[in-house]
Length: 255
Image (cartoon, rainbow, N blue to C red):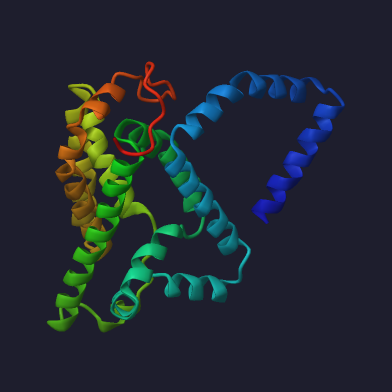
């Protein structure tokens, strides 16, 4: 239903633009003025926005499916103990491409504000290393803790097949290493706020997922050595939320 509403709005806007209605005309001119900047911002962070595109496709699939189909899809692509024991590589790879319900809208904003500038700063390869390290290592850490808890009867056995998908572990790791992109003293405020949020969520929620977020943040901080590179330092001279690199050509190889 939301997709139908968006389609209808786009059609109505195009009709209004063709008829040169004032509001539609102003919006069209506004977009034309800012399109080069938006396109530059997107193309300078190819992995971030390709990932976001894939998430948008899987979100459409979830929104257009029945509750039963959604449950089956998420169970099949979860990084729960059952899937990790049977298809570990598949589970780890595919679980990061699903965002339940309307989480996609939040992730779209966070990707644009944090993952995109982090990719431009680190380079695509280093960015991917941090994201994958956070996603994989935090997932495995949570899985080990859950396996131990179930084996010693501290947790219910039904958690072996619990749904666990999403991008949050990888995002948390990148958000943590993004600390070193910020100027002082803002980086310490950012690091403190991020750490406090992860610890508070764990103390209040007390779930294995919350422990995974804290672990992912720690992993992100541990990726600091990846920022100690001449090319990375050079790109740090450019404004954080701009496609400009101060004369530094776009980089996607991780040099």
